[in-house]
Image (cartoon, rainbow, N blue to C red):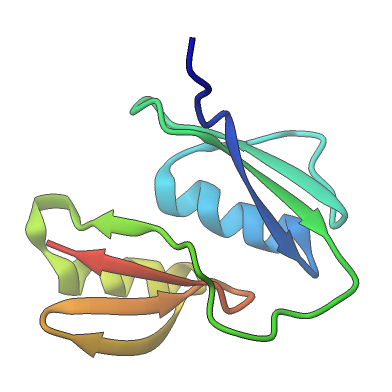
Length: 113
């Protein structure tokens, strides 16, 4: 039997801040025992992997080599970008209709139709 992706783990300075953002972004459930040191977000009904967040001492220093590509509901990229910035994302750049944002700790992700 092949392996499967159980969870994705984010290194961060404040696990609770980043986990809250991703729980709200994806509609997942934030674990009630979440702290600044460690947090868990259960995948929403679409069955994706769970997300783990762990505090590490070193800061993010460069672009990630792995990131999320989010599909905007109904293809409305502008509305989704607005929702995500209200949750704490920041604009990074846009190219060919693809919008790149950063989560509260600077991790890049894309929003597309």
